[in-house]
Length: 311
Ligand code: PMP
Image (tube, rainbow, N blue to C red; front, side, top):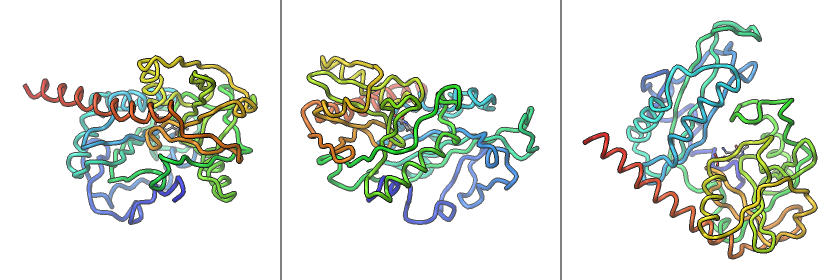
């Protein structure tokens, strides 16, 4: 299965039963529509999140809600909801959808009031949908790793795009790179940045094991993933030295292990980049396990907070 497989549920996404949270209320799934003259559609004035529910609880939900708000601010618009409002809405969608293990997709966009580039104070919409979701890659991918091909597309400079935001506009490059990688028979693309340094995959951050150390590119022109930060913390807890620095593509040749991190990918071993092979080694295996523990710890915090609120 390709990496896009995960975003292809059984039925088309606009023709499913269920409820979607849309501007403050739950609406029937098929009625969660927007107008063709939406600013967000024409000019990519749209930001989103990708979240994952484990056993009915969304991992690091509040961080995701805050990032959605921060992404919108990077694009110059304010969401009409607080992070706490978004947390509550997300919990409600997940609960009402009966989701145990699933994916959550919040999205916010400028509406259809006008199509001026300087759109002024036009209404901003927010929707949150959730659906059950198995693993992103085929069974066995976690064990054996996935194959990456370096893309001709690059992550833009911070002078060219709102690189700190999880902005729809940036995913134009990810979709180009993903199509290219699949056409060439790879599972996913590895993207360099505007300087030609290692950046990330289409939807996940990159780590290399060099000697006994873990090295990862500085997120100065791509998303500093929530999973990335979780894994860095776990690695340091395990006594592994983590180095964030600018990394040349040629340094892959010296890496023994390579893996990706992301909400969808979790900790995903990489078997090869352009045919250069890596093992699914000790460090990757330890961090796959540590990530599972981080999810369990987050669930405990979530439950304690919920109990506190109820009490
Ligand atoms: N980079 C890109 C381009 C992404 O789309 C994602 C997924 N949100 C990530 C990195 C990883 O971020 P996170 O760990 O917060 O999911």
